[in-house]
Length: 202
Image (cartoon, rainbow, N blue to C red):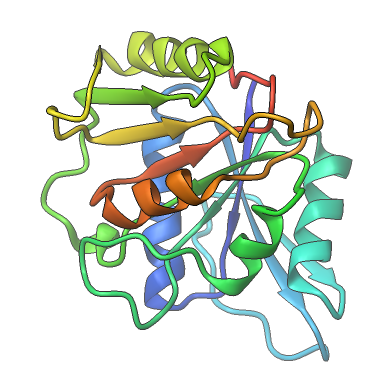
């Protein structure tokens, strides 16, 4: 089973991440929460129905990376940066660090996603700059589990965008191009960024 870790500290933006995590759990993923403590500060309240990890590490990105690898997780879910306008995606600082060489897929929730009336994923768009098949494989796997349709071309407004890492990236690592970064900025829906050459099967 695919394991998905949600970066969670109880803030509104991390509630958005949890909401997206629950949508992905509907595709068959196993959901876990993680909070990285820097100075043993109090833990946030967490939903009682989801496993909750507290990791002591001075670096949130490193703590999440180590936890994901130790748990065999395929994905980490983040909310957007806290000043992001509702409905937009702007990766927070920790997510940006993991978008530069991280070892697992990253899912990014738009600001306000937890309170959005529409969360059902009916359409998915797969974007690869050089035909990397893993973006389409992941989109197809999600679509099958969620009863969704994979749509092609920028003319559609999808409910989820799957983005591949840029050409030249080491297999199994995440890095995105300037074009992909711009696409994320304009998405207006959750975005899933894949490591190079690695599909998430769900």
